[in-house]
Length: 459
Image 1 (tube, rainbow, N blue to C red):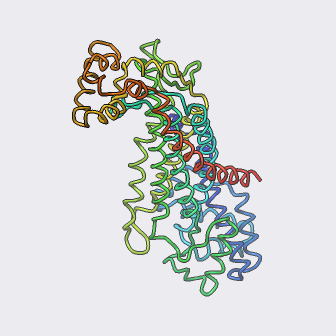
Image 2: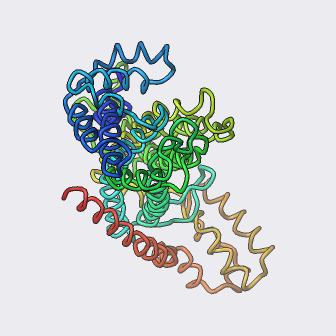
Image 3: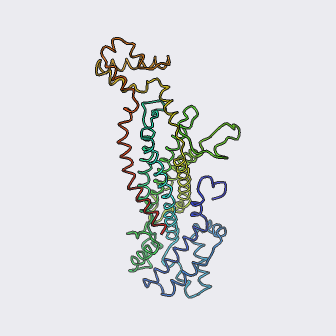
């Protein structure tokens, strides 16, 4: 990834998908394959260690390899050619056992899932931090009232904690689904030329199981050269995560509008400025979240669209997995980093939230008012009464309750204290509190699982 594209990823994620990192993963496959085959007696006992030693020291130049791969059709062909030459220079007798019984797609797919596994570990860190920050907002603002907006119009008040619970709930579900997809994708690819491990004979299952164990991957029941559903599922969950995080970014951007002014991204020198309008404070983090949300679905569709590949190995399809997943992981990492920073440093203006409720003159409580009035005059008349009073309240900039009280016939039939209670914000928020608690309870096991996985990785 060149420097100009660095704004759409993170440095840690870029490092995992660098040219050197991809080649290192491919060489690791070749080293571990040779060691597994030696241990299982498929190739001479001395061949595995000899090949593995060269894999540790050889350092291919990515650019010549890439140019040769363009003609060969895959990076594996020129890489294996160089590796065989290097092994032959060290011990000519062992060169014949490099890449033995394997094929280009084996090395490409296994290297890919190794990198994807490490990439998911990086995402877990930000998912854990983001979830914790959102959970903190839920707890802190469980009773901080703000207007709900439906179809971009003001609705009855909710709590900001309840809004944050909605973000957390979606992040939690997406996290669980992504981790499941990641576990499924972390599967060894070893099938040889036709997928059936022809040269491995009766030792095929033993070599496959041993190689998978050495690499920390699952051993498949059958090679998956032509079955790309695991990678398509992983790509889809990455795209869904980008969309879920993009929803958070969209909401924050809307709350940051000057006309609303209820919540703000962290600010700082050089952040969110305008080249033409110095007064502006642009929502930079939200922009990164939305960029990922817009771009990721089409990328996932590439791998989903390649599922009906031809026979045992598709033409022109499987090599797309690496650049496609590279970009998806880059977008997800960048989006999560922006979301984490925003959630951890979010400025919440509770006074502005209250002021925006108050300037609606009580009309946003129309549903509750209608419910009280309906008990006395029936639903149809109650709806008409509240609708007319609400229109007058906004037109005259007066409290809707005052207008309702001017209706002598209404006040004779409806309990005035019940009307007052219908306009109490705290009453409106009561129903949201159990939902917030339920979301926090659902997040707790996910938080524990992410923390445990991160701790195990650190060890």
